[in-house]
Length: 270
Length: 331
Image 1 (tube, rainbow over the protein chains, first blue to last red):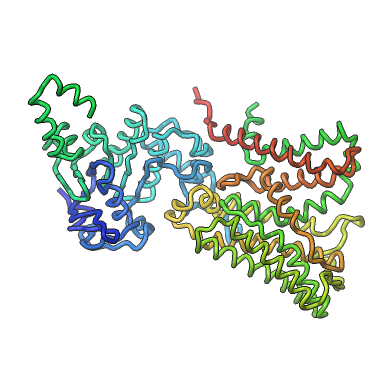
Image 2 (image 1 turned 180 degrees about the horizontal axis):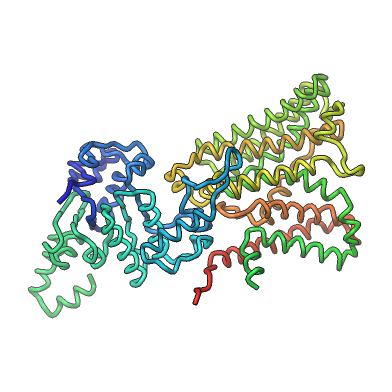
């Protein structure tokens, strides 16, 4: 339906002699949620750090709206509209919602040396932005970030990114540390972001969460793209298998089925 | 009730309670007449001396760093002024510029090391502290042959930096302290730079990603702390018509205690100028106000130690209150 916002073409990344990413080709479109799945150490973090401008690809191309781009530092990626929200969301626990929302882009009023931080506007905008995402429990911009629940922090961080014009939203395991209810809040916020036409890259190893919001799935195994498929093309079990090492686990399953009885016990151990 | 709760959540809460606590303690157990204490200059003079340095140190600590080289910078500022304008008899303006320049240089040195290396700033400034003590002592001996240098300042310099006001024994640096406190309050709580400093103290990496010039701000804060210290030294040299090499070591801890009692979190990200100001007042009253009590002066340090621990404990619990604060849902 539309052109990809962000595209990777044959991207490789190595740190010295160690190859971390191997020939990654991926694309994400506006209004689409790309779920990036993979076990620990599969290269997910390196991939998102490459997207966010922390690392430079060793070889390969990165395209935004079809044009090649190269980021020297995270700020460059942020300026192009790529925003990363980390696992713990709000990063300034002892700052108020209004203040932390506008770090680096503070609204001011007044003239010359007497420009004052416009706390009222900051608080109002921040509260409104997060309420638009359905988090209605946040009503006071003076509250400290550290006092919010994990889900609220994530939602606030996502709202902040979108408020400042993010076009590609990278969510690094946003639901990993959350309870069921909190996680569902965050998933709802992700859906809202998608509805607004943002390209979302959702990193997780919880298949259920991925299935709930994803349009497009990519599985990383040892730095390489093991699978790349659209919603509905694979079942939940197949995805789990893929993430956990694919064939190896499938083999194990088959092996276990041969000697049933003991199979069930062995499966619980594994 | 709401008003009290609101007040307690502010970073300055513990310092206000400490101040009240100390006053009550002195009145009840020391038989202090509050009127006499209020009129006395000794504690206010002392508060101004450590307060002028405590303000930038407070900012620096909110940004997550610390500077202990200030201890050496107070005598360094005093000696520079006295050597240039006393021993070499150059116009006082050169002494003033010299003192401030040495503050800026040492601050730049600290700041640049702090952003270029990963060495904790406690260690970096410990190094500059000891090094500057050496420079001041050896430099003074080398240039003047003495560790104490007399200085005669002209009237205008006296009036500005080293005179008594209100016709009594209050020093003019009290006014400097109050003015600086207002300026620092404005910068910290009203301007966007304050927000940047809080963000740097909260999370340096995120602050940098948000586009804040973290390195430049850090260097600037180090320049401010060490220049404030040399400024205080300069004022004292002008006031007392002389400067000595010794002194300054106590100031380090007194200044840091004032800042911590004032509710600044040692690990950064939390604090306020009002807190630092009141913390300094409290510290000065404990330290100098004890002379107005029936309590033996030798107990002063015990009181300071206990007050520090109580204040820190209060800070801790008030911060928890601030964190867990949520407005009651409107029905």
